[in-house]
Length: 258
Ligand SMILES: O=C(O)CCC(=O)C(=O)O
Image (tube, rainbow, N blue to C red; front, side):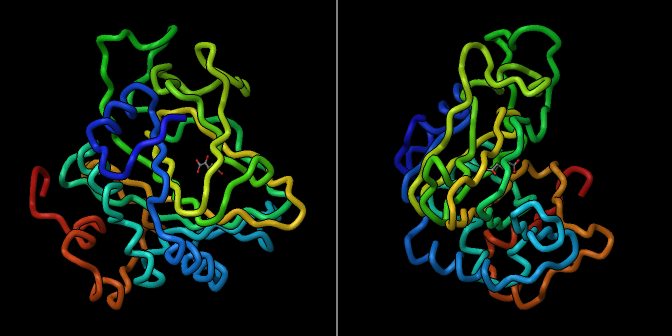
């Protein structure tokens, strides 16, 4: 899969249009990764979080971790990554979720799927003249090395041009098979919501995959801050957030619909 240097925003935009995904080595530092791994180890489930103990799915999944501790804010506006998110989704884009994962030995990866399809096309692939804007982007910050045995994310480059989700466990699209994304700690995979992607199994004996997802949406895309009716920002987190981070959390100026 194509690799980009962190400030190659224009080339990455082309990569997102063509392949639906880009890979950026060393988007986070080793210290940030080790701090984040320790912070995940210290989390207890609340609200809609899932844990190994509760769900028996050999994974822990903590939602909207920015609201737990201000140290998670730094992943919302990593230099280069936030430049790409704003270029792709507009200067008023925001964070619709920040999810921390631990995938334990025994974890079974999700089948290929698309997270959100802005346009549905009934036959074949989208005509070349149709360019679908990006509505949601997910960034995977790999917090530990991802080997072939350690639950690599799978992606099908170009599959956002299918205009539909995979059917009946389809393993490929347009002659392109799913690729496993191997990574070093700190590397980032960025993909649009209509790209076919999925997980894979953790077949290692002892290792845990640590992953942080940051989901960005255009301003008009809803923030997925659950539990929705009870959601409250932690004022201690807001007090330390920068102006840009506050906007990413939804502190917008009035606009259409206000
Ligand atoms: O486990 C993974 O790497 C993939 C996660 C995924 O498919 C998703 O969050 O939609």
